[in-house]
Length: 259
Image 1 (cartoon, rainbow, N blue to C red):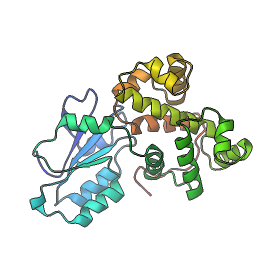
Image 2 (spheres, helix red, strand yellow):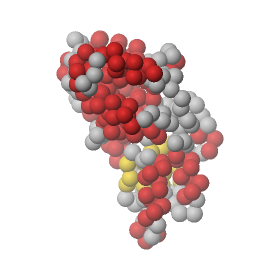
Image 3 (spheres, rainbow, N blue to C red):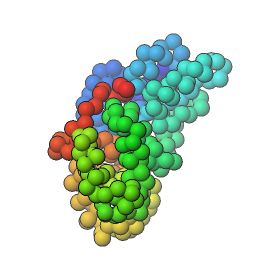
């Protein structure tokens, strides 16, 4: 395979497809799609810009060139800083689809941190205090079920918390709490053999129907799709788009990758 080349991997994750510049303009990407970059040398600046401005909700997996290529370490660091790859793989003669699938399915090491970093890359330039608040809400979503309990965990009144989000044109705190719970459900659906009922009850929902209805209402996605379309970024992006369509998200946003 040519160095410096992009590939798409989309459900059902059967084969890699060459990614063209025309594909970058396609607004109808399949949920769960992944961009794989076989890092090269000569065209790195141009390719890095393409990777940085890839469509929202698409994770990036970078495969390094062979060590004999003596790729400048600063180039790799620039790719990491600007392009926000989900994973970086050592060089291999072939791109193994099963390895990419494993990476997409793997639970994040730091979901709250990854969510706030995604918001930054996505162009939502919220201040440091709000990023910390969002991060804390995603952390608390593993145990907290109500906005009242959430406000106590943040040491602020419900009213003050709501005003803070409203003033910045961001979804209500209850919606952030729910997307945190739904992200955890999505990750479990992709990694656990448990049925929907067991996952729902483990996350504090009364049953699988309640979880399914909540997921559909907030993201437009059903659990069956969340299980089969691997990764979490596309799911979180679906929520952002739903919130914007309903008018709950009015915070200005720059182009993907522009910050």
